[in-house]
Length: 293
Length: 293
Image 1: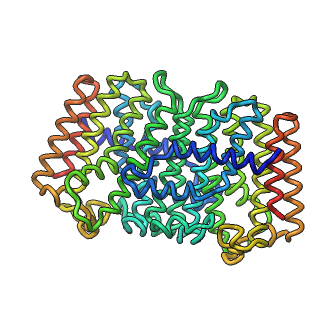
Image 2 (image 1 turned 90 degrees about the vertical axis):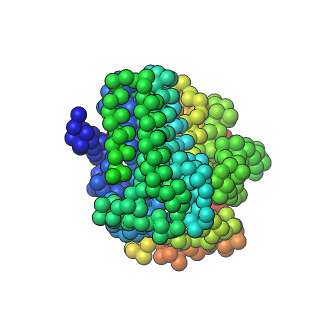
Image 3 (image 1 turned 30 degrees about the horizontal axis):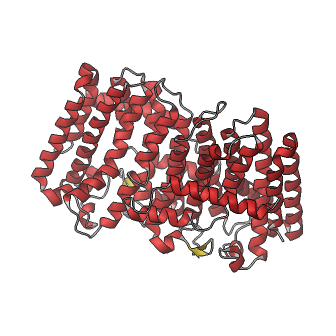
């Protein structure tokens, strides 16, 4: 299978759906819709929506039915990046190779663009068609928990509070689970729900999501150390500058790589009940790991 | 009927429910839950949740069934105040007579506390029990529209962009409809839906909400001019300082008062189909108008 072609195809599907779900730039007030679209169409990898669609397919569902969930998780992800980049948070000027939202639109509009994307995520889901086993409210509840004060937002709080402090391995894992793994897991779970997954399938994919999510963030930590800014599309070495705890800093590069590989293997095992149907999910887990090199 | 006693009783109900729906301060990470609760329990008037409950009662529903919606709209309202008060927005130090969130917790945590309250609003609704005519997704969709880029957020954008510019009456009405009337109307609609309102009841209450919502904001504009800071609990004369357009500035005090009275009358007419069942809603509309004096 040609994974890069697969990714390009899926990215196109998500982009088209996002274009459909978000108000046009010409809708009043224009500034907010321009700002929402600026960040949504900034050339992100669409990793979360790709996982949503792949999870839906692994459960025998239709991709079209998973698109609202796929777009909702991408809106949540993008909102969190806009707010994380604000001067009062991580204060970053560059994201996905372009100036960050607040650099282009000012801090006030950037806050509001994030707010609007967070809100529209729930609006998109609320308008979607439920699968037999899962009312839409179940998907929304899952997403609200993953994006909420104990997960995505909580992780950012712990991250902010941890700057300049000496964090242990457990603290760091907590931050990574909250900031990255929770939304990644929700992306996969929502895809599964949209495909009317059996409870066993949903459990297996939840385990898969948690492993892949943590592996993904460990590799992000590694890339921050080993890659130049041009390749990252965001400021490299930023975690070190901000005196943030990272996997390589606490465990060393080799141990971090080994942990990412171990998590990827455990993600693979979680997929056993799916047999051949999960080929794409396996390939995606390997692809995320391979970014290390 | 003793309205102030009624309001005190209802406020107590909402406060208890909010306490139940929001994570305890001891839940990790503590800072975010402290910040969420700081703003939620800052002594707000609970006007929106009171309207939610009153709308539910007018439709023959149980108050208990309307509490998730009541709390969700209050979370949305509080999030919008936290973000509006940020230095990059209206830059206000005082809210409900206490220092604003960012003054106490810093800008970063204030942004995140707003994000978390916005998110939990949808989480609370998603866990509630649907009425026969309205799946939970219908309530969530309504709330997402009211809080979204074309309403609540859009109004704040137009407000920000209007500062120091010469706005006309239509521009101002647009801002007021988006910033205030939309969420107020949604508060009422969600209450009606939780009570399994008939389509005709829902339509009548929507009209009622729009009139009351606009009247409410006109009176807020008037109070900003006529009341001292101590009485407002927020900085008085702020709209003038920020060179914001207000009703009294564009139409004069007397015409503004007349318009608020006219809207209150039209709110009353909208309630005709309810007969005696809407006594509380009538009294609330009058109460909101009476703040003028």
